[in-house]
Image (cartoon, rainbow, N blue to C red; front, side, top):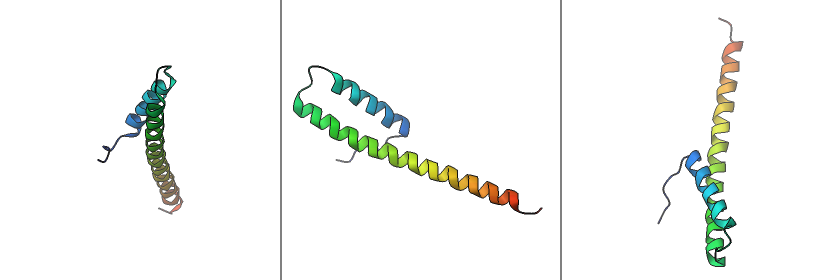
Length: 72
């Protein structure tokens, strides 16, 4: 079953919740491994979205700079 699409903010919140769960003293090893795996997936998704947003901002900035260079 595929996980629902998360926003960056939701992903960061989930990563924080996973970290808090992993810091708990009574977490079983198998649960810890599953949480760690989920955390890696969520992190990769958030990083991908942040990279895409950074690329968009860079492209917009370059387009604005090019437009400013054009004579009017």
